Image (cartoon, rainbow, N blue to C red; front, side, top):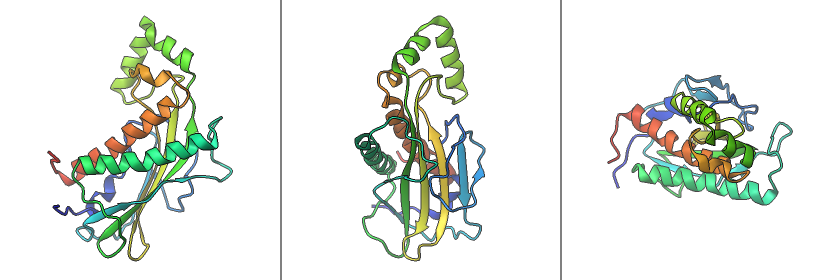
Length: 219
């Protein structure tokens, strides 16, 4: 498998398409700042050395447990399921775009630690009914064009930190609140369906951002 330099993409560790500013940092003890994309806070180490890292290790995601966590009415089983999906979707997105993954720590490895930091449930009937009206469809189309989510649709808040797997040095981090695109009518079919779609969307957009920054074509 070809090795691609991963350090340089830390400047674009963003999950684009977000609408809301995260209400929590998900436990990240980093000097996070707003990015150019709504709903995303980011950090990049000022002395990051490009070209040093050649593979990435994605940890199993944690569930944030501090007092500023907000999971609404999600059960512990729901949280565990969404955290598992978070790890799986990020790994799958990286594999799809041909980034080299590893299961071992060591020199030249970036470790991505993900945390499910919050969940907002959808109001299924109201969310779907609103978007099925002519006015609702018009609003949804506008929101889609601007990357925003639809009213009454839920979301997932995700925190991520990239560290040097050998030294533990923090390289970059992000916190983002992700929702599905506004015109996705399936997002209103269940209280947590939007959170699931938000995680899927976020994982793909995360890797697309890496591709753009590295000017690489995964095809």
